[in-house]
Length: 123
Image (cartoon, rainbow, N blue to C red; front, top):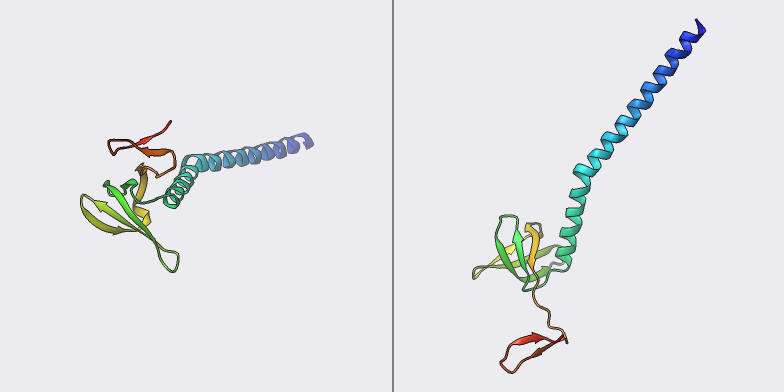
């Protein structure tokens, strides 16, 4: 009879280990399927907002494509966007920013004006 008690204890430990492994796999799957993409999107939105400047075209959460006119920083750190939508200027919270569609051209030293008045990149 002592051998059968040992087998019962062994199968109980094996079941406990299987349960722990299953729980770790479920939590790992939850992280990679749900949590990680959401965190990456938050980081990307934060980075895009920090580098946003007038002239950039953005896609809003409402599906509108707007041009950034100004990024206003308030006294307490709150940020407000001034967006141009087809000639209409609107104020918006930074949470409307889904992604940057096009970046405004920079005024660098690598640009020069051609004889026709157009700006071209030297290269």
